[in-house]
Image (cartoon, rainbow, N blue to C red):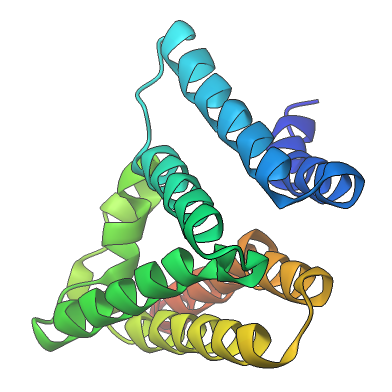
Length: 185
């Protein structure tokens, strides 16, 4: 039962957005997504949980996406704010790498992962490349999608390269973290 909530949190908003988009259009879909996001934040607060940075970033992204659509009338510009955000985040990852800091330690701040906190950052620096490549893929795919795909195809491409691909990159990161420790035992 505990597994159903994260899966629902992952897929329900995407399916809900897509259904509303196809039924009544992009602006109502964005507005419902915003209501869902605000509801999620309120529910987290009500349950006594801290509001996660990812929740705030999600709301800000939706607000800027709505503004991009409203002011331009082009629904594919829904992805420009996240493209901009991905680009900034890629730059931030590059800076962390140059400073020899772990990207994964930074990304995991929203989650209480005790086992990750005990691993020194320098042991995780090679994982930075995985995350940099992942965000570069997200940027390239969004740019190509905005230029060459219709909104429906672009939506599912971005969705797949979003949370599902993030989970895969996390799994790859965990495998890479465990590799040196298994060699030492």
